Image 1 (cartoon, one colour):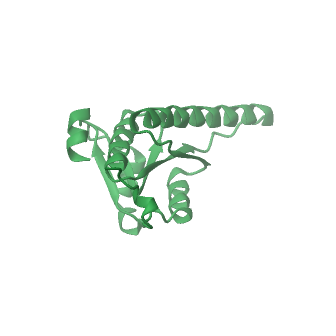
Image 2: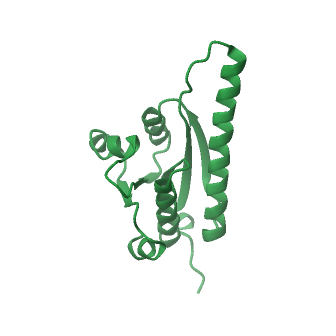
Image 3: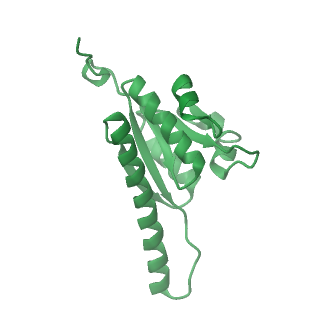
Length: 163
């Protein structure tokens, strides 16, 4: 029996938004979202953030620093997209946003009402990153979608079990 994808049945596809960086937590969130998307006929969107760069007095140096930050974010997103495509068969959407990370995520969610959940990875220790701290705290009540916080210590088998 061939399974008809949910988006061909007239329903919207579930979209899981993952913030991409080089942290272990982002990798955990990515694995969870990819597995969850494959189980729900959904798709992963990747948001690569380029934080504001420190000001340099010389504009050529500033431009070089900003270009390197954009290139690094693009490389991380492309690598993450490749791993999802290999594991789940669907190539995720990739977006690159510059500026304040919280504002960039909020703007993305405003522009993309189809996002079913924001997926963030939590650190193994008590020192959480600024996005988890903000969105799990003061920003939680104002999100337009559920927040999935994936514990950083979960193994692949545990992620399979809970996703």
